[in-house]
Length: 457
Image (cartoon, rainbow, N blue to C red; front, side):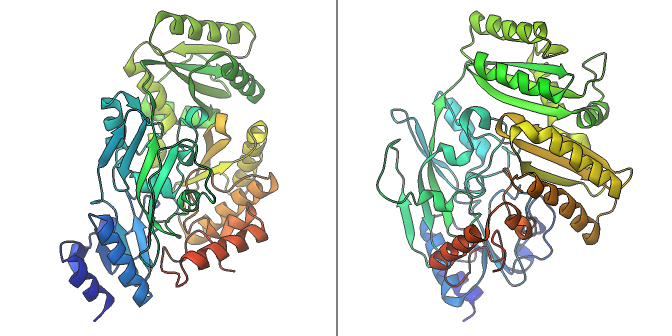
């Protein structure tokens, strides 16, 4: 009996998709770098079904690739030749909201937006937030240790996880759905699986922290003359805004391209930097007065040149529409980078990166934006040529500079396959060897997301 036949026999034909039932959407994540369809797609609706699937695949030495909402940009959910995909889309739903503990127990296939809405209905905020909230899934968020726009206030995904359940390659279930803030009982095994991109185990359930739901928020769009001013504004915001929840900086080329593409105009003059500042509030008049006083002080001190406070949700959405950068998607063969460097040198790196890319590709589009408050910089590059050779050259220039500046090749998107060969630019040989030892210990046959994250030794 083949592995697929055994899977159908154990799980049922409704759980195991084969042949024409394996649709194109299972080919690739949002990087569109997937080249082959999986030979089968497993869609378990219970933890027990995940256990059966992994035990069978492990016995056959069958490569299996976990898939969530397929919104990733690193190729981490793409199946290789002869591999099986394990979709968590049916393992979905919020199991419990514990109001006393301020926690949510949720299944891995639950869309982030569904979990957020459930939290709001109970009067809480689920702090994890991404632009792809409508389609990304909790399991994928945890497996990639997703970041997003609220990290400056609430931390990355791993900072919001109290308990975790994962299934190992041989079908062993590690279930510690802990709700306690303090639990100092030996190795913190949950952290092995958060950010591991399914290479060590399949996350099936999690206990997430909840926060009090803010009653309101205030948003401002600020124009600045220099990166030094951006740093000055960040320092002032950290000191004066207790509810600071977002600090998003846009370099001039990024801001100009997207405002033009969206048909928007905010300031009479053009400025080198534009920043979105947002804070969560109690919703009373004191918050409004405090926010206005903060901006007034920034203007008086010469930190900002101009500022707009959103007077409606529509105006706030127009600020964020520029930051989300939808017009960039129209550029041919767009390449998105997600790197992290010390906050103080982000602009120095951006200048060096732009200079090197334009020297090699004159006329290319190169623009920068980022969650400056948490050291994350995004780079958009389009040279009009999507050949593998050109893409490799763009990667080599960009990641070479990341290594030179002492940064990380991935701030929040993960490693997958697209950044795997550059992981050594940010991690030492000793660290990579320990990663291989952990992988070998938990997945000795190497069936879980083969070829992802860790470069060959």
